[in-house]
Length: 360
Image (cartoon, rainbow, N blue to C red; front, side, top):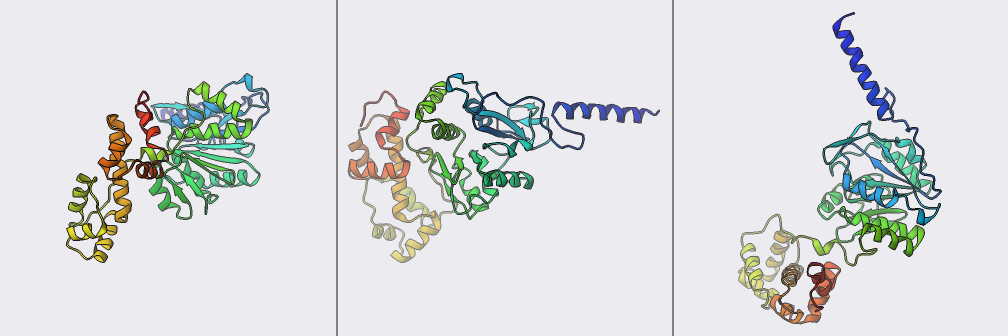
């Protein structure tokens, strides 16, 4: 018996042990582990496991649905994770995990949650898409956190609907799935038993909302208290958006934008803008839109709101002084545009950053 043959047998034995630990056959098919599901009788929640798992997103799903909560009674959720890739699986944070269940569990799940995804450009296996479509067709609910929206969008079930994702992924999601209307402002959205949420922490808001729908406000409040988070957050992720930066600014437009940022308190009618650029009004409007992607009015309002954010966080000025400093002219106008842009009134925005600050 040759040494190479012995080495091959040793390697095969190692692989067989690895497959057994991961609950797989040697063919690579993932098989359910002998472990049983939780003894409760409520909806079965299944979270996807995949190579490159987003650990925070998965962790909050397990925290909300996977903890033992005897105070909720026997109708509380059953929770189990299932792997869609052969294990052991790598996870963010430098560790690997061995799944208890394979994709067959999705055929039984009442709620399937996609806790993030490998990469915005990563393809979704067709076998997974087929299982998700079939699950939804039999009445299961589907939910995603952050980049997990790419998986649900790939099923086609969100075509014609509005979906949420992290604002950094919004453009990529919209470009890849043009039939989906992407909401870069909301914490979460729902459509026909499909739920999508924004950045990672917004997943908590969505999961608590699902608890509320299933078990009522008191149960949702109880879970939120255990997590030490509000049961419902006002506003949306728009309040945290970075100031948009145009990809290209025309040579004649850029100096005007800099000047306007420095003099937001002044009046900036369209005629003044066009005159400062030595253009006709028609030419100016066309070139401004090409340079910024916005109309002059929308751009100016956005800049004034961003300047107001900075002053609110500074905590020194009142609402009237801030409205004058950024060019809104009145506290009423500032409140109107600020809330329209961020989803929050200025006082609530300031309190998030300066909790001890007196109301405006």
